[in-house]
Length: 213
Image 1 (cartoon, rainbow, N blue to C red):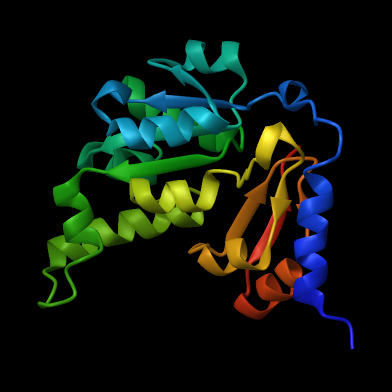
Image 2 (cartoon, rainbow, N blue to C red; image 1 turned 180 degrees about the vertical axis):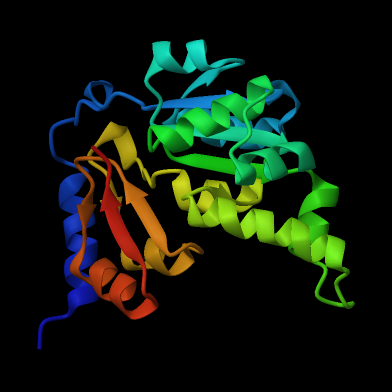
């Protein structure tokens, strides 16, 4: 019987001896950030910067210039949730959100802590009609295609996996990497080699391996 784990180790060793893969040819996609990016934890910034070209935006005109792959709203408040769900665009943020939805640009909202607590972590007590109404706005945004997340879940879902082998060699996705992943989608950069055991682990855990353009 073929020892697949042994094969995986051999593959990893062989890859360390291959010619260097030109990672500079892989252009980072634009992530348009709405909000004060500088207030984000430096660790989060480092992870996001490694895979995205960060562009701070304040208006629809900014978005037109940079052709974003995704738009990230930091510290999204109640006003944005309500206006976004109702299609109202009378502020710079709500107008930008409306334009993203009209043009099918992927959007992620990171709600303020208090709002996230109300919308997500309020299962311990009966919800008032007011809170239920707020949740209905969130549900409507989700139906529109908006992702409502924490910064941690955003990192898990939207930061492409890139494991650099020694000496800058080709990337390799192993069974252990898949087992350590917490999301349901694992993004990898072009050129990443996926071992058979990694594919099996992804299938067993219901994880989709997605190769970025």
